[in-house]
Image (cartoon, rainbow, N blue to C red; front, side, top):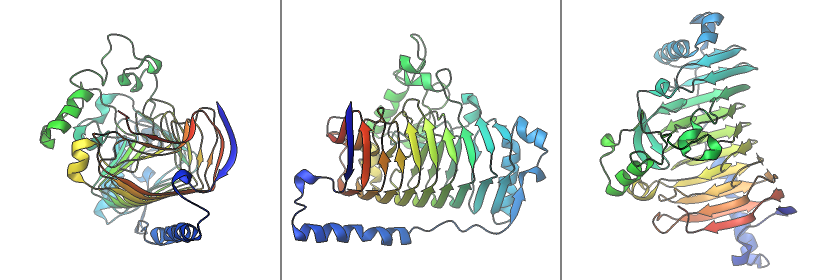
Length: 391
């Protein structure tokens, strides 16, 4: 165990002479870019129309299964040009995913709880996704949008993926997550190894169909090729895998969001091949990285070649996790212009403050990473770690 009580102002100190006046000027000019990046992040523009979910079903019907009524509300709202869909206070069950559309604010009244089904069959048919940085068709994320714009999810709600050592997590193939000998898992030859082989051989994406029988867990919330996104005040718990995963997105604001999930690969937030991202005033307590910035794995990452860039992380709290702010390992498309400041990281179960992980097969680049005013209490491994032999 390593106990620190320090404030970190500049990273890469071994490579940078901070006493040099020119270097100080350069560092200040780099931080001056933060305001410009934030000013360029467009918030979603949502029409003023409002729809209460009780217009589409009774409270009794909604609590039994909110999904069909949410689907109807989203379709109706979308057909009329968009607006705010209000979910009244209560505890609900969703037998399947929520698929969002453009120009909609899905707004929860204070005290809403939605528990999502943990039956994998409820997340079929498969959708186009990225799984650990590789394109494929797999189970739908619990909340999903594809090629939409002006999307908001707001309000003081708890969204529960109901993943545990009996559901979803055993697919990791590790005994600490409920796996027992003889159970199927993502480690089976026809599951994750097959997907990675498809990537290596660059098999046509239309033929990379997984889903039932292949044991690749879905993300909790994935927005794919979307822009102008706001996630505010929600709490996401017990995710099958990565919690918040924007892919090829632009203009993302994530504020006052909590992620609490201690399963395998339960990263809190994974901006992937995305640009203009603000993550602020958030709380992360996770079984894997708190924030991990990615841009595609190996051959797919290099083929698509879209970096993650212009990412601001500020005023966040990181508790448990493999790393507070992490870059990689799926970073074949590159990563640049990351600014992290005024965060607090303190837990005996937090391994590292800043971590960059990759290997010789990934390719890509990592440049212009700036960190200041990070309060580090206790971490179990290191303040800063670069790994070049990460799987």
